[in-house]
Image 1 (tube, one colour):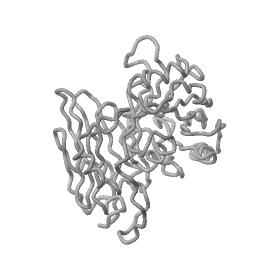
Image 2 (cartoon, one colour):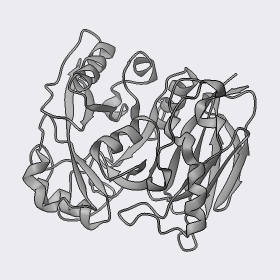
Image 3 (tube, helix red, strand yellow):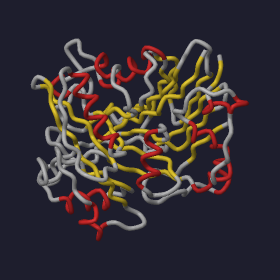
Image 4 (tube, helix red, strand yellow):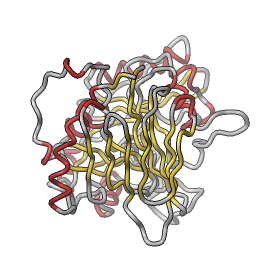
Length: 362
């Protein structure tokens, strides 16, 4: 088995709990963080060790930034103004937020009073189209201007055209909730090019994250794509609409899904680069303390939360569970018969964290 660039070097992600207070960890952990060089190469094409030509960035400056990339306001179908929505996320410890109203772009400069060194607003839009009455929603992140939705002669063409529209203005697309109204699945997504991000968890109660009736879950769709060789990373979002009144399971409230991105600073371009390279984990509540990869082994540890208990599954080709570990830490010895390994951590309170895939090649 040959290893990709992201695995030729000993690599460690270390962090304090994600949020705006970065690197609460002791200095010895910070020093160990210097071995994280290969994280910058996650998602890169396969390389041999002798092919690596780069300068080492200042890895001591890398930090985790917690954020949400899918939220709605009264500019489309949300119940609160952009200012109220942005303030909710800032007050709850998020480092960045993308407001993504349907076919509407909110200029972050209108909310400049909320932006500071600890909180960033990134311009975005939920580019909302359809094919044969089935919704095609693709979020555009870090957009310089409004992107008009496009249609196509097939479902694949419709998705592709909207991904392309976002790329044309140098935005970052992520494909939203495939199971919403059972719009499309892995077969269509496998044919789309230029996409790197897929919602594998969405906090909207009507998006069918877990599938049903013979239709796969979003996580199963992800594994089909990864097994087929598609490089795509799993993202968790709120898709929040309801900030007023009761917070309940049948309402579309915030705080349900988020990402924690490893970046050199709280900067839109750095956050986007981290997302597209897979330098993040997705979560509904579980916080990752450390994620370490060597040429033969994957290790991770979880930030304890009271008396909660944790189970980690290491997952490979075709969604096969390769190894199961109970507790706040676990490891998996890499085998020759896998092309990718990802991990999901399940907490006893029903919360989860998804670790992005590490790719190998035989």
